Length: 215
Image 1 (cartoon, one colour):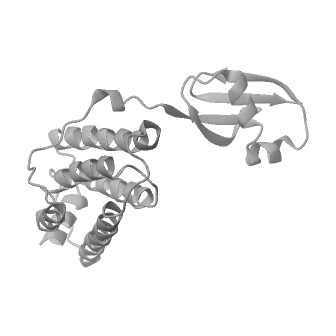
Image 2 (image 1 turned 90 degrees about the vertical axis):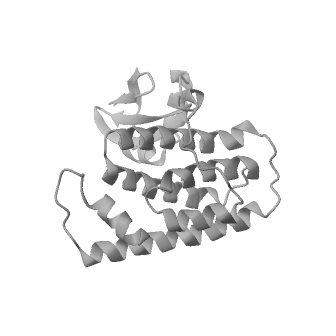
C-alpha cells in the first residue's frame, strides 16, 4: 500500500493524469525497502554510546539540513508539489545514509530523524508507523523549523580561470578573499589547469565566485 501511494505521488503533479508504470511501482517498493534498511541501521546507531554530548560544531550540519528540509516540504505541501516532496525524501535518505557513519550526538540525531519521519508519515504511513514505534515516539504533530538554522554557514565558491569554470570549493561564509585564494591554490583541478603559470590577478565576488587571471 505504501509503495502504491509513494508511486502515485511521485509520478506527476496533481493537475496531470497519472501514467501507470509497473517499473515505477517496483522502484517505489525498492525505495521503501531501502528506507526500512536505513531505519534498522539508525536504530543500531542510536543504541551505541556517542562520544559527543552537545558539540554544536558536530551537530550543526544535521540541524541545518533538517530545518531546511522541514521548510522545503512544508512549502511544497502548501503548493501541492507532491512529486517534489518525493524528491525531498530521496534527498533525506541520501543525507541520513551518510550521517549514520559519523559520531553525532545521539539525542540530536534521534530528534532530527523523528522530525523527518513525521514529515514522511502522511505519504507512507504504514512504514513510518513501524519506525516511530521502534523509537517509542508518540508525537504526531507536524514539525516546525527554526529560522536560525536556515542561514547556511558554508557557501560553494565557483573557481574560474580566465573566465572559464574549472572547479568549486565549499568554504565558510564571508571568509576573507586572501584566505580563499590560499585554499583555491590547493585545489587539484586548479593546480592542473594553472600548469605552473603565474596568477596575474584575481577577481572575487563575495560568497559566489573567484576568477583567476593567468598569463
